[in-house]
Image (cartoon, rainbow, N blue to C red; front, side):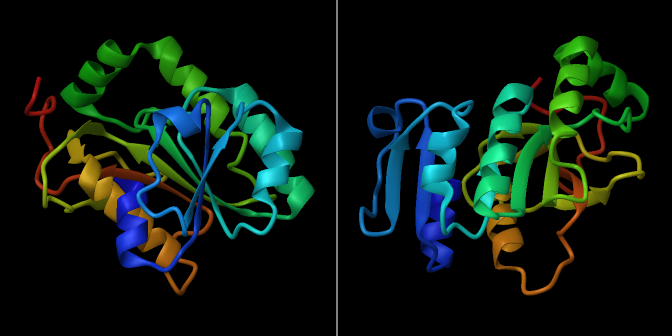
Amino acid sequence: MATDSLLRQTDADLVLYARKATTRLKATDTQRVRLVDGDLTDAPTLAKHMKGVDAVYINAAGDKEAKQAIAQAMQTTGVTRVIEASILGIYDEVPGAFGKWNTRMVGASRIRQVAEATSVFENEAFDYTILRLTWLYNQAGNTKYMLTQKGEPFVGAQVTRQAVAQLLVDIITATDNRFVKTSLGVSEPDTDWDKPSFY
C-alpha cells in the first residue's frame, strides 16, 4: 500500500530491499521501482543499495540487529532521514483499559524488545520519525489518522493500513520539519476504546 501510494502521489523512485524481494514483491512500475534481495543485517550490501537515497523507511519493529546494520549503512552513505514503523506502548504511554489489553495481547517482553530496537534511531545522529502504530486493519478509502506526540497519552485503538500509507506520503512530501525528530502515536480519530473493533 505504501509503495502504491508513493508511486501514485509522488515522483519518487523506490528501492525495495527485503529478503527474497524479487520473488515476494511485485514492481508495478519497473521504471521507478527496484527490487533488491538482501538481508537486513548485511550492512555492506545495505550501503551499496542505499547510495543516493533521500530517506529510508524501515518495517522491522523488534529487530535490533537489523536496525543497527541499517544505521551503520546510513552512516556509511551519509543518509540521515529515517522513518521507522514501531508499536504503541514502548514508552508505557497507553493508559487505561486499552493499555492493559494491549500489553496482554502483545506481551510485556515483546514491547520491551521493540522499545530497545526503536532506540537505535531515536538520537541526534538521525533525522528520525518513529511511527508508534496502534492495531491495524484494512478499509479501502479510509485514510483518516490522528497523531499524538511522545510524552502524551496514546489515544486510539485502531488505524487502517491505508491511513498509515497516506501518512508515509505526507511525511515524505512535507516541505517543513514538523515530522523530523518526532515519535508519533498513530491512530484513527474517534477510536478511543478499550480494544479495537475487530477484537
